[in-house]
Image: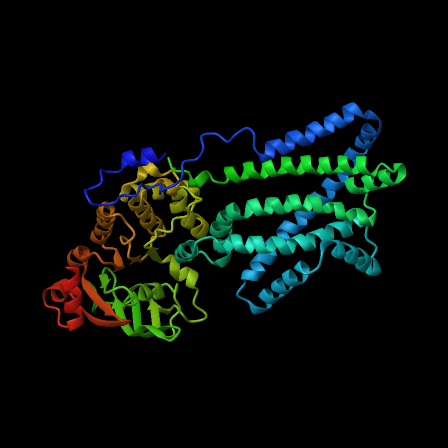
Length: 272
Length: 249
């Protein structure tokens, strides 16, 4: 790539330093090594799981039997929470950047308060606080609690991503006659997305892991299935081994998906 | 020059003051620009040239004074600044193209979204503008693949797409490699020949000398001297201007 750039440029006059248009950068390794932390973890986790089931089918296959049902609930809570937390995060991020004192204060206070309370406490609190006023399912309160918590964290991610877009972009858009809202929608957010997506993806993965906390409200998610199975059979070690491996495999796959999405978003930065 | 006495000015700047904290960036600046005029603002860096230019479309808010565009006070609360800005094309030192849009999309975006021009029509016009600035072959690439000079020419086309009455150039060639300055200046010269009204902040004295109707010299936030290029470059009166010219020429 750098060689191409150098070819395009006229020869440097003597005594003048010409930096190729692509900038000076380290050459990327031609192809990523096959053995890396990610592949090692994934292959390891799958191998251990297969090994355990093959050698001791008695407890392990029984444990695996409840995994699909539990996973379904885990995914349900995760996806619903993502659907609520991402818009909430966007609103919070915009609120934190708002010029209006009041909106800014509301958003900042929300972030400050939520960040100061452990998620487990929030889940308990929202479950019992909501129950005092209205009858809600444990699914609803789980989704509300997780969304509120992660909305605050994502708010900071959105804020940082929006602030990372160069000021000139805003000026160029405004000078063409776009108002603040149009500038945000057409110019700032599409560019911020690229910085925002990887951390938001990671937050979503963290969210999936944290849904294990909703098992305290007797939500029949993966963790709760494991807990009740272990309580019945006293096979604590075996059960939690499988649960840990399942969570690990899923988060590894999802983090790969986030990586792939990230590289797709680079489309417009590529020079030829 | 052309219509100085026949009609009202497009831009009317009257006793403008602007502070950055304690520091006065503009001190009692007054300037009128008439249709068809080409005004070039010169001066050392930090003299308030860019601030003055950016005040005209309210990218900077002034503290005291009046700036009106076509007789409308741009800082009045009821003025629709977005509407006014559509009439003032602006070109920046750092180009500021939208990197996530192709060249063609950069140029068609404002007319389509702000004026509701149908896509086909906007693209046809954009291709015409791109041909005018000499890069119609790059219509479908992203800005990152263009050189600085090409990007700046696209930025000029983008500003022209809104068919502005006036163009503001904020040091359009200062961020360019020396060998790319010419291609951008050529575009600006062509624009000037077409009769576009423009206000240009630049360090390109050659451009000021040949293309300007009026050259304005600023220092420390004040307009110290203004006149035709012949007056400014031929017989500068203010000692600060004489000193400045002896350094840059």
